[in-house]
Amino acid sequence: AQSVAQPEDQVNVAEGNPLTVKCTYSVSGNPYLFWYVQYPNRGLQFLLKYITGDNLVKGSYGFEAEFNKSQTSFHLKKPSALVSDSALYFCAVRQRDYGQNFVFGPGTRLSVLP
Amino acid sequence: EAQVTQNPRYLITVTGKKLTVTCSQNMNHEYMSWYRQDPGLGLRQIYYSMNVEVTDKGDVPEGYKVSRKEKRNFPLILESPSPNQTSLYFCASVAGGASSYNEQFFGPGTRLTVL
Image (cartoon, rainbow over all chains, first blue to last red; front, side, top):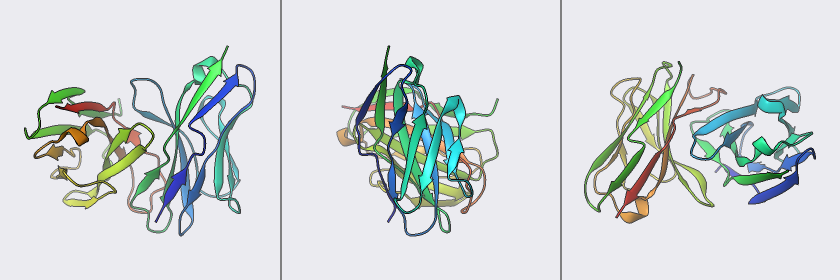
């Protein structure tokens, strides 16, 4: 069965500092990996995805994520955090070869402090 | 504008009173899905549909029904709602079939309270 873990419920970072939101996954085949962001009272918005190829993927709003197959991780990063990045972040996985289901992690709340 | 719409956005009801939450997408997407979001649990998939007349259970299907008679619509039906179905519900759609690597488009959410 597929599963996604986000080990931190909350991440606090000062504005201008780099941020990392962690994600690890478990899937029996090769995964498609996604990051979504949810702002208050809004639906989820797509940030970026890993399909194949370069392990470092770049997405919206200056975010990037690094796929590490040996550690089964897909951590979200940004070199310089903004207060407006404060939101709830979800990692999701879909199994490549028989991927009817999407599985989401529990979410990490990011607070960027001015 | 490409979008997923849900109605109603907010609903307060009582135990046992049947309700339907509608979902519609205008992107001609094959795959549609329903999730519920609960604090600390993230999004859990209720049902999904690979195409018209093709639906299947997700991780938490108990107490819910769905139908997919048209490609654009995927209503969620609660035949006899109970308080443990109080939650925030999201509909989503994806272009492509079972092996698609495309991202999901989410609706704005429906906040349901069952008294």
